[in-house]
Image (tube, rainbow, N blue to C red; front, side, top):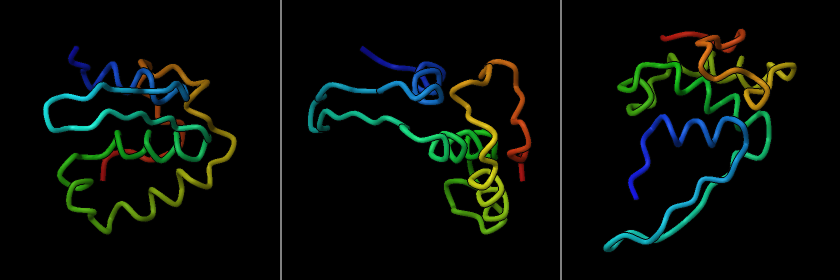
Length: 92
């Protein structure tokens, strides 16, 4: 069964396990963003322009540091549909 990006984000940001089955030559696997820091970094990267993330644009660095350091924020407790990044930075 296919999984959309929205469904994957809805599982990962709250800290739930995301798993997938083997498909053709792709292995099965799973991932969990177990710590608030991991979820903050993921949330920050989602808020950025995808070409900047794909090319590891250096302008992302300050935002990554800010997201990691923002310990009062945990995306697991945030409303992921509200559109707020709660101080973790916006698009670069």
